Picture: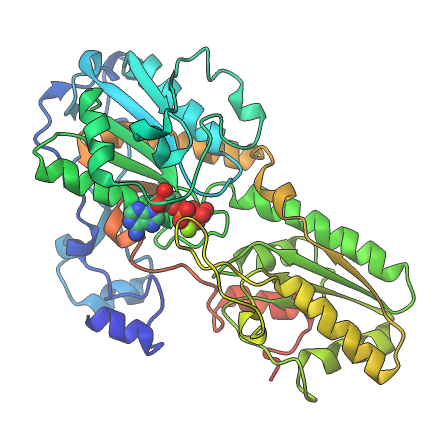
Amino acid sequence: ETKRRLRREGRATVGAPLLVDNADLTVKTLGPCRIDSPLLPLLGERPTTQHYIDESDKVLYDDTASMILERRVELSELPGFEPAGPRRKIYFDPSKTRVGIVTCGGLCPGLNNVIRGLVLELTSHYRVRRIFGFRNGYQGFIARYGHDVIDLTPDSVANIDDDGGTILGSSRGQQDPGEIVDCLSRMNINILFVIGGDGTLRGAREISRVATERGEKIAVVGIPKTIDNDIPYIDQSFGFQTAFGKAAESIRVAHAEATSAPGGLGVVRLMGRHSGFIACYATLAKSNADVVLIPELPFKLEGEGGLLAYLRRRIVEGGHAVVVVAEGAGQELITDQPEGADASGNRRLHDVGQELSRRIKDHFDAEGVEMNLKYIDPSYLIRSVPANPYDSVYTIRLAHAAVHAAMSGRTEMVVGRWRRRFIHIPIGLAVSERNQVDPAGDLWMSVLEATGQPPRFE
Ligand code: ATP
Ligand code: MG
């Protein structure tokens, strides 16, 4: 409660020291690990602790001396994440382990890479023999949808990373966790890997809870997917780098359009429902945007300090302008459209790009200033492309970490990367809040420096 209050009052942001302690970071396990890891031969004659994770080790949460000093605790009590990686002793007997994999929510670059990474690690290193792919998200577990399950083998996943999307399909919409656990027990599945966003992870937590209530030993391990990079306690989510790289191309296009017409104005709408990371990074990657608008910072259109007057000045003085707007920005400006929700209950966003374009046109018309507006919305071009080399590396390493975690009986957790180390995060913590651009932080400062826009339009 104290933590929530501090955050609400803006006195602490995600990742602030002292707000996270070891109790928050503890990961659940199904039981003691008694089986020798079959990875032993892979790692040579004399595997060292560099190869195997010491179960008592942790990845420190704090990373500056001042954060550590502020805690005023013994070194051994400093909070830390469980490090990801192979354990010398594991929980499941690989030859008898049956695994399920499911992808839910929106598309994101790297989904197929994760599926492939899981299957290859499970089969070649742990020698797990049965891996089932469930179709179309959580629907795949529910009999009445009649979706088939796919046998996943090294052959069947060999080149799936060449394409974007997910070979398993995805879906939205609530499914009963009880029915999902029924299906898992009917199929004798021991490990379930879920690849999905905040909604999916909440679902995964329910599945894990129901399984625990029923005394079923099922490990539920998530690989968090968010193209918006809005999951906390993770340096960067997979697919994010691919996404903002692709998004930067749209800014380049908008700039070319804007500079090629009298009074040219390019408006680019990018992803980012609650967090403006894609807009910020894409802008920094291709720094010819003049204004970036993100959900974290409300802005005013009218008045001397408003966006419209600023754009007019830019066009009159410089001849052209480019505006990058994250899809969740400026929602408060649109009051004349009905509210709606998708099948999973997520609020439908109004199209801020269209609305902004309309208001900008009206303004220039009223002021009698010539302006040529080009509106660019690349959304599907961004989320459905294959992962770039960086994200391909990242996804395969996340997949390896997820397999090691699950084989050692961890459950109700996701894998992530914190200060460049792979770690385990309890699902509860991963969905407890959102990672957002800090308007007082150094990322936003860089954006302001790159665009030259005022800190606020007010
Ligand atoms: P994205 O943010 O990319 O859309 P997501 O995982 O959040 O990904 P959703 O459509 O919100 O996508 O949810 C995916 C699945 O998780 C759906 O089947 C949905 O019913 C289920 N789900 C969402 N929220 C919850 C919740 N609070 N409890 C249980 N299940 C949930
Ligand atoms: Mg979501």
